Length: 441
Ligand code: GLC
Image (tube, rainbow, N blue to C red):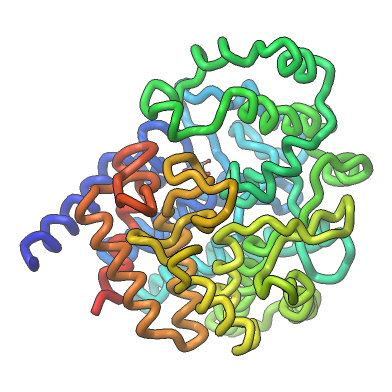
């Protein structure tokens, strides 16, 4: 047992070494650039054995920071092997985009402050202070951007404009909205004439992963289409929100923001400062506004579609991620834990499925439509710990790490068979494996 564990630690580190690009790390060969929340998870894992590299991983995210404070969800490197690359995004159209660097045009879950705070715990005092000083202003600017540009109702909940911002790209609640969007003429024709097939020839993901584990060509076009509309508006938030295609208060994103605000306040304190008043107020507001995403009928959280004002009542594992906020009532937490432990929903042989198994959208192999993701498990495990569910957290950590030891460092896994799926040698699976090992009982 110990031998297996040790060799797995070496293998996990080898994955992070193989995907290294100097100061930052790609998610996998299939994703040859830098992603925002991936780098945060990667830094958390790296900090278990190389906290200095972990600090660089976080700081390298600020290269891509826009003048308005936004941290983009992708910073492009040199590789040309990614089909939605710099020519697709054309971030240079925005006057806010950084000089000499190509990025995407919107963000991803706001984990940097949280990851920075965790990394700092593993550095020496002097190193931690220097690192946090380097990071602090950039983090404040990012949180301010989130509230200034995306707190649409001014109630403290940040709204997202695309499912890629949740990091759960094709999750059913969002796909419902994506599929109902009014298509531009070119897309309506492609759909009408059933012409999406040839796109498969250009999809670089299909070279590495069977199409049955990915999303359809038509869905790929439907996901790309709003980006083209935002590009036309030069990624100007006001212009985008004036005629929004998608405007959603995400349960997962706001729960993570609550935890990240707490980390930012801790960083400020460590630097002998106080979090600026505007951010303190917003942080408190987000905590109380989160409750408006609770659905009393089904006892779970949902995201709110701001175009209709209604909750999107399609279940996904994001409801369990709300535990990560650390701020919900013990009654709600209890209900979520019961939901999680229900074998007909989330407590499968290899939990946690990204969609409950009794949902009509559940598919055990398809990207975000059923498979188990290690980053989601990690978030839920931290949430369980914050709310005092230590045995459940250890159990989920044990199941997750054993699944990885059995199958390897997949991008995602079948919640029924534990088989690894998607890209192989996936960085956050390796990184979070290292972090979760410490929780295994
Ligand atoms: C996919 C995932 C997203 C991740 C990215 C890189 O787009 O859905 O969460 O950040 O791949 O790994």
